[in-house]
Image 1 (cartoon, rainbow, N blue to C red):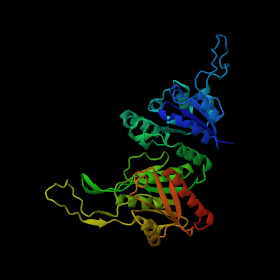
Image 2: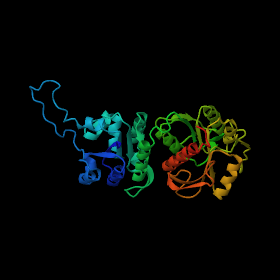
Image 3: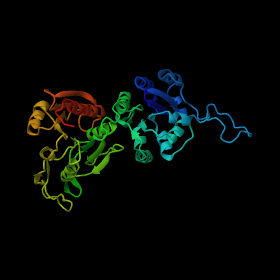
Image 4: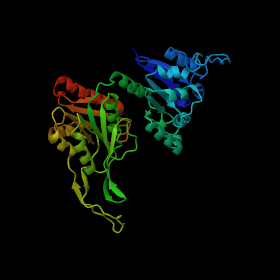
Length: 414
């Protein structure tokens, strides 16, 4: 039986992409489309019906027949409440694109049309893929609505940063349909395949204080680590995410442990590692910290300032020594040049199960980007695996596939 997806299309200019989205989703799922009045101004209802093979839901009162005065209580048919039937028969409600207006409706619990009432009734997972102007996305009201929905368990896909339909460049771009399809397919294809497994992920760039207002840090956005956490959640794993400060929300369902410094990262990681079956060390941990941070702000008194740095403990090396039988340990390696050579040297020094390397400093990949390309060394492959440039979410899924491959070979006991 195919999974059943309810796709809600709202009044964002990105709605023109939904015809292709419906076609791609329909390759492995049964897709029903509900179109808001604003959405109908952006994409023809007929095209969505042709793509899905089903009539498009438009009105809350289709088929409604006024109840006669002499109708016995409880005997009137439910043909006038299509939102219940849509919600009951869906395994996933996906709002793509989700406008600022519709996010506000969801956040405030409004139910004045078919799609909003479906969201109120739905007991299945609800996902949204926002698309709007960067200033709308950054507006405090939209930011608050986003936080409210995340707390309720709504999963956000995007938005991305890039060129917007209005001609501006910024955050608010509709995530590519191929990315949405990949996320949905993964959830249904690998649902519960990691059930019972405990996964530990570290993410973000640590911050080492110089004084109360200054610090040493790096350009890590945390996106790769968060993508790994989400990929593990998609497969039913119990996930602990130890994160240095980032500007993205933690995946719904992960246990978030917030840290700031390398020392804090070490303490929390070593503690959580005792119970983990898989450890994914994606955080960019500072190699050095300031030996004696100032308790007060350092004043600008001279032309130069010397800071004495002290080496931080090597968390990955400690985990290698402490690892328990059957535990999968994956490290990450960021290089600016000679990627394979430098990564190979690190792998020989720290023979983890997987070493995932990427080259930073190039536009469009690596730090702060939504995409990356990876070179993965593993104990069950004679040669490193090259993962071509792709969304970090899809690369995260490929990394988990490689771990499953290791389980299959028996080189990692389960």
